[in-house]
Length: 75
Image (cartoon, rainbow, N blue to C red; front, side, top):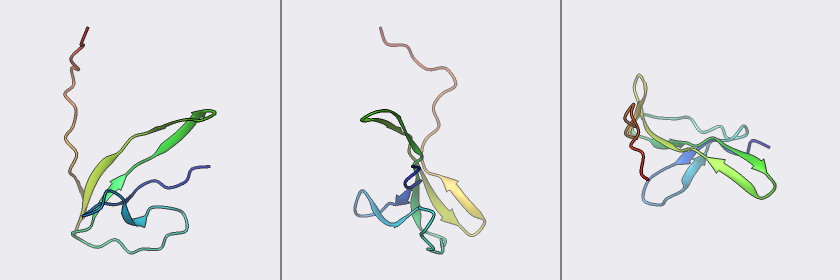
């Protein structure tokens, strides 16, 4: 079960539209969305990764900052 792959982002943490196979919302420039794929990897355990984007005339732009190539190890 894939569920949804993202949602709108605005004044509320989770807003419409909901990025699902059955949602037919037309994305328009200025809309802010999340790309949020998730997976269940064990009974009762899931993992979700979220990125924020803004829809533009030409596609989309990342709003989330990229991680540095070298991650700091905290001991």
